[in-house]
Image (cartoon, rainbow, N blue to C red; front, side, top):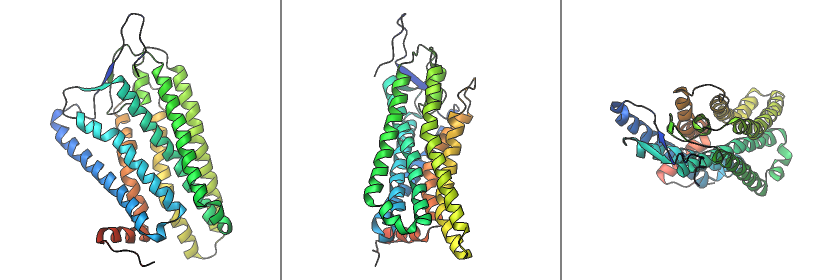
Length: 315
């Protein structure tokens, strides 16, 4: 994919990523920190996958979706961090136009699937708590696979739409991106043609891609809370809420950071705060998810231990 040519022949064929810090003395520290974060994220999410595979008690719809979420977390951090680490000590971090759009496409693809999977997990909790008698039929293996397939299809459509739309813009200079990966807000700032339609498209599609799942999540948990409050046993309420707490934490972090990143397109200048939000989206979120889902889950913790020790479950 090549950038659209201008009448005067001036066109951008590559972008310069400024990265996280401009002080070269800090580069070794940044390299070590982000390499550590990458290894922890990949290792943590692979451990989640291994635990789900070896522990029969985790062969349930909720953990099926969690396993898919772990794959997405590995993909999301791999799309951005390794390339950033590879260019960290370069004098200029040059990214070809096509590579920039490719990174943008895969980032939005994986984040989009993440968004829909969180919705599927909320629906799973709604069925498990509010419709326990029909749970096994409504959340059968076939239904689980359909929900994952639909998530990928919707996210692919969203990512392709934004990638094609950004490819219609003219880039004739400057070509310096004040970030460590390519994303829509930063590219909008560099375009020398009007980005009004692209921004409207981002808001419109974002409303469908994020607003609709968020509404479904809120609706699901409104029913869950109502059902749990009808449980007379304090221990029963605590157990029911504990199965939802981890998911709600991940949802809050995911939508909070995403809203801050993409609802500020009207600002005149993108600042270093956007780098911090980018770190949260691409590094912190994927790294926290395994911790959040395993910290208060004895079944996952025992499965982790069996993975480490090589012991098999007796059940």
